[in-house]
Image (cartoon, rainbow, N blue to C red; front, side, top):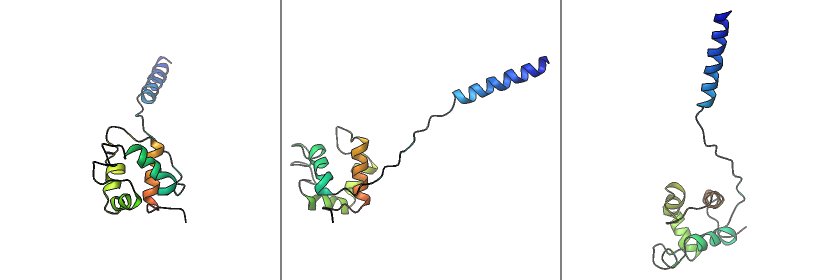
Amino acid sequence: MKDLKLVFFLFTLGLIIAVSCKKETTETSFVACTSPTYEDEIKTLIETNCNNIDCHGARQQPVLTYYTAVKAAVDNGTFAHEVITSRAMPRGSELSQEDFDLFNCWLNDGAPEKSQ
């Protein structure tokens, strides 16, 4: 009987340790894309996060003040690399997850300028 209590105690202790040492994982939530467009959502995000006087509004290339310039950066891959892959932009701050998801959806949808 004493051995059975010891086995039960050790089993319970092992279970408690296993549960308390569980590795935390970060779950990625599924974000439903809503077909954002440059005119409706992205232009405002770029104006807010990228086009200040020291960045892509005047001094840094590419200047992102109009759609054709933004689309050129999308087409040559620099926009996705800097914003999505490396998350190097915007410099000095981070996009909210919602803004990041919006940019990602827009890029995955072909970076449309306007709604069809």
